[in-house]
Image 1 (tube, one colour):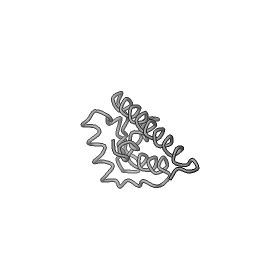
Image 2 (image 1 turned 45 degrees about the horizontal axis):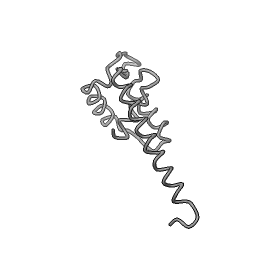
Image 3 (image 1 turned 180 degrees about the vertical axis):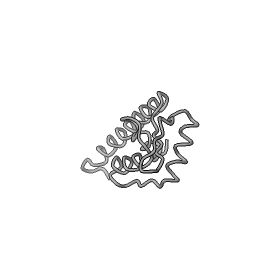
Image 4 (image 1 turned 90 degrees about the vertical axis):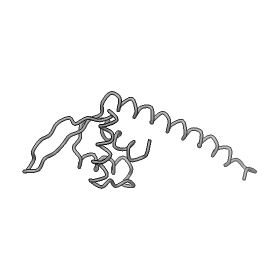
Length: 107
């Protein structure tokens, strides 16, 4: 799973969000490192919807502008959990190797 996809799913883990809210949450979760553009976000959301990982939760009108809220499906939650485990396992393997590499006499 690519990082932007992981971050979008993570942004939706606590509940439905509208597009701008997803963009803000992705920025917060990534420490400001990942800045999604609106077009990129909606292209990703369309793909994730086609894969059954997110669905349109609701639409509303705020100050004359439409807001679409998206939420994770159960498959989306399962995919996010699986990717979280995969990343945790990779990080643990890297930390183990870094521990060995940081010992005196190891180049």
